[in-house]
Length: 59
Image 1 (tube, rainbow, N blue to C red):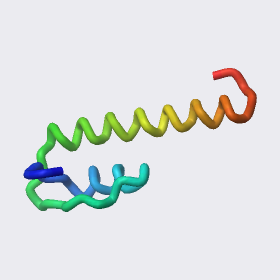
Image 2 (image 1 turned 120 degrees about the horizontal axis):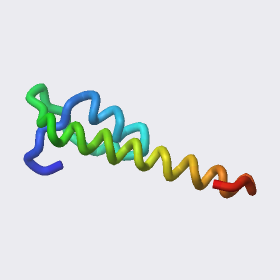
Image 3 (image 1 turned 135 degrees about the horizontal axis):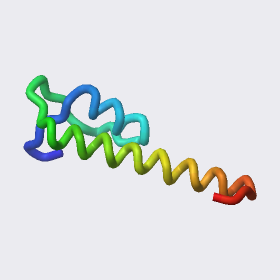
Image 4 (image 1 turned 135 degrees about the vertical axis):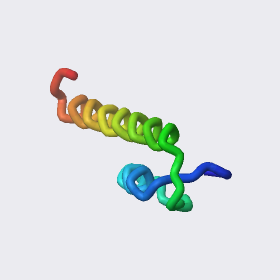
């Protein structure tokens, strides 16, 4: 993430969706952590919708 400081929690959220080549810092950027959380939640929702559609159910 360039020069941005990523918290352990934000790193774990990104790792859960397959993004793990990042550095963790003890001094994290809270705004970045918020946006990472929102991004990962959206990815989880999209994956859930895709699974629903693949199963033939209505989204």
